[in-house]
Structures are given as C-alpha cells and as structure tokens.
Image 1 (tube, one colour):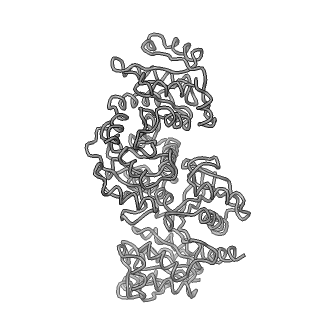
Image 2 (tube, helix red, strand yellow):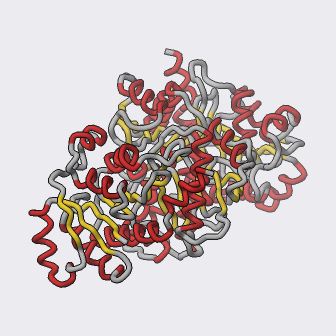
Image 3 (cartoon, one colour):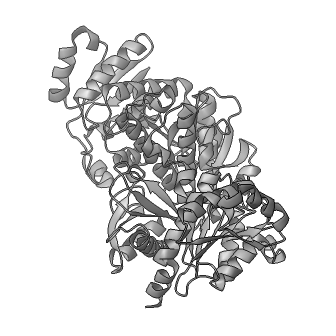
Length: 313
Length: 313
C-alpha cells in the first residue's frame, strides 16, 4: 500500500515534510510505503541527508508549487504539474491509497472536487476534524470549513459521513451522532438546524442522539458532531487559541495536548472518491508524521470506498 | 439610583440572590439602592437573617415565579405578578434604572420585548457577553443567543450596539469592531457575513476592522465581536466547558478565571428601552453581586438611553 505526501506543502516544506515522512516510514515499515511528491532538486538532497532512514521512500517529481496565498481554483487549473495536482492524479488512478498535504487548503479542496470528485449521492463533501474527550477518546466534527452555508440535507449527510468514519476508522460501534445547536430541545436553533434535526431523527443509517451544545464538546454525549462549516471553523480555531494560551502559561496536560494540531494529524475530506487529508499550514515533522499515519488508517479502513458503497445503496 | 434584582431567579434563589444583593449593597452604599423583587414570605426571613447588612435593601412583593423550565412567552403573559414581570414594569416606568435576573432567560428576553420594547430603529435586540483578552481587558461579543438566524442588517446593528456599549460602559474610545468569520478576506464566510461585511465597511458610526477568526477571540484585534446568536452561543458554552475542564485539572489562572461566568456578571440585553441583564442560571452570590455592579455601571452610563438617542438620529 502506498501513501502519498505533498513534499512542497506547508510553511516549513520541504524540510518538515521530508523529516515527517521519514518518521512515518519507520512506523509503517513493512505495512505501507510513503511516496513523496515534489521538486526533485529540492527534495532529493534532503532524502540523501537522512541516509539509510530514507531508503524506503519514493520520490515522484512535480515541477510546480501552489503557494499558500494563491487563488485555489486558478492555481489548481494552471499548475497541472504542481505537487497537489500530481498527488490527486495518483489518488484518482489508485497508484496511491491516500494523499496528504499541508499545503493550500483551498487547492486541496478544489483538487478533491475536480480530480477524484464527489461520491455520487453526496451533496457536498465536508472537511472533518477531531475533538478530544475529557474522559478519553476522540470524536469527529464536521464540517469545519468546506461549506459555510449548509442546507438541512447537507447537515444530515455530514452525520452519515461522520458516522461512517467513526465506525470504520475510529472503530466506534454505533457511533452517537449529535447536532451542534444552541439548545437541547428540538425546536431550537436556526431554520437549517431545526429542519436538519427532523431529517436526522428519522434517518435509519445513523444513531442520532439529538442536539448537543457548545458545553458538550468534550463530554461523552456524541462521537460525531454535526455542524455547518462556519461554526466548525470558528470552534476549531478557538480551540487552537485556547491551546496556545495554555502553552503560553506553561500549562501542559494530556487532554489539552490533544488541542494541538500536531497530535491530531490532519483533516480528512469526506465524501470524495479517495482518501485525502489536509494538514495544518504550520505543520511540523511530528504533525506530518501523524497525518501520514492517519492516511494509512483511512486507507486500511477503505473509508472512501465504504462511503461510496453506502451512498450507492 | 435604584437597581432591581429578581430575588426568585436562578437555581439557588432566593438564598443566592439575597446574599448577592447584600454583597452588592455594601459596594454600592451611598451610590445606588438595591430593590429585591420576589415573594415576601420567602425573601423577608433571609433579609432578617442578614441583620444590619441588609438594612439598605428594599423588598417589592411579587407573588408568582416563572420557573426555569416554563415556556417563556406563555409564562410571561400568564404570570403578570411574577418577579420578572414586576421587574420589567418597574424598569418601564423608570422606578428602577436597571433590572437583573438569573431566572428564565427566555422570559427575560420576552419581557424585554413586550414590556420595555425594542428601541425604534433597532431591528432585533441582542444578548451580549464578554470575552477576556490575553493581555488584559475585555471585549464584548454579540449576539450570543437571542437571534439564531441573522440578516446582514442585524449583524451590522450588533456592531453599532456593541460599539456603544464598549464606548460608554467599558470606556473604550473608538472601539475596534470585528466580524467573526472563517477567514480574514472579505469574500469569506456565509452569504450573511459576506453581505454584512460590505455594510459594516461603509458604516460611518463604527470603527470596523474587518473579519476576525476563532483564533482572534482572545487577542487585541477587536473590542467588539459581531456574530449571529447561534455562533455566539456555541462559542460561549464551549468557553464555559474549557473553564470547567481547567478547574477539574486544578489549573487556576487570572486569564482563564475570567471564563468563569461568576466573574463576568451577566449578559446585557442591548437595543431595548431599559438596562436589562440576564444572569447564569447557576449564579452564586458572587455572580449575583457582579451582575448588580454591572447593572449599576450600565445605569450610570445610561447605555439604553445612549442607544436610543443614537438610533433616533
């Protein structure tokens, strides 16, 4: 099994990408091979510097780079030999089973839609993220930024997508699905969340437990948290700033350590025909390594195929 | 000047309400008088038990109580002798300059709309809350729950309401107003935030600094944070759960201590003809006391009148 990494993506690329790939390769030895995609002249010397440790890594050349500030759709279309475009082509042809990048988030999303494309039946793919629980474990939250405005039917599908991920990748049997809202009662919320609640309530494919509130984010109530991409994005970034404030104050704790994007890996794009993960722009080697391990888990679980099979039926 | 308190509001009423009122009365001695509103037979013995400390407090009888679980609008209409209804009547006739309650939030909002009513020109009053800054100071965030779905014009007005509060009550000259969004660029966000951005950009009454993100919540960027009531509510409740988690882990810190609703006082309702504050249901005497002090500050600043005068012109 091959897992691809955009060697040019992220603020500290290609150094952090190569270092992270070497770390992951050690952990995945005998199970998966890591394919680096990027400019040969920039990446090759870094691999050489790692010596024997980098021997299992493959390099696929891509001459162009989509920069962090570039317009995602334009850059993706014009730079067909960029590391992101090459990565998605390899994912589409299944030369690799997962593609990870800490590069331009928008371009990663555009690539997913243009190249591997949305799974038939999925209205709008979503970006997911992970929320640690106070008493251990993790829950998946989606959408966290792909879709700011969401129709009720989209929120319903996020529940299905998240539930499949929780089941097949996180190994949670009958995941509890909660709808983020401003009150527990089903009549509460925006017009969209009120309507979504009614759809979710009668959806036979998920274990819907009703509305949850901001205060339930870290408790045991839900394994899957549904929200629109606006709310999810704001929550996620607020959690990051809480983590930064705690680090600033020298408070270290295993629970809050999970607010650190480095520990989390990346954000999977769910509902497309392939396992794609977006990493944080400031990804360190540790973050890159965890993203690759997550890509391996997603590939092993065959989550993209599971989603496709479920939405087909 | 008289500041009224619903003696029957909150999970620990009337005991916590009376104890908090006694604390506040000591701090406001010679400046303002506190008026307790509630059932005479329940409140009088508590006042007596405080002895001399409670001498400056007045008790206005109200025979009914709106319970926490009751339907706000129905309860408010049917219980015209409830402490909340009596409080709003006194606020409407200006027998008191502020009215505070830790009781049924919905009933407090209904009372504000039915009794003192929205300021002419204000589309929808909002509930505000306060966010501590890492480097000291406080910023005001609104709406945090009165309006789940918001039109762009409502978001624009929240900016004006919050700016007036920051200026007149918090004493911030030319408050910086930020729009909570999922990206800094003006084209980002929901249809409503995109349109609101355009309105705010040309609004001559406020100092609009553009979009802010979840990660900017605790930094110096904005003194006023605009958001819809859905987003604000979810953020606020998440902050509370972060605080609870930190307390659980025995981490105490002056910055995070401000996440504690007890230190904050309450949530003012802005855009109505009177100074009304909603307290947290689990308010302790300390929280009640801080809510009353906040009521005094709002009354001294004459914020409701300032808002009225501004929206008239």
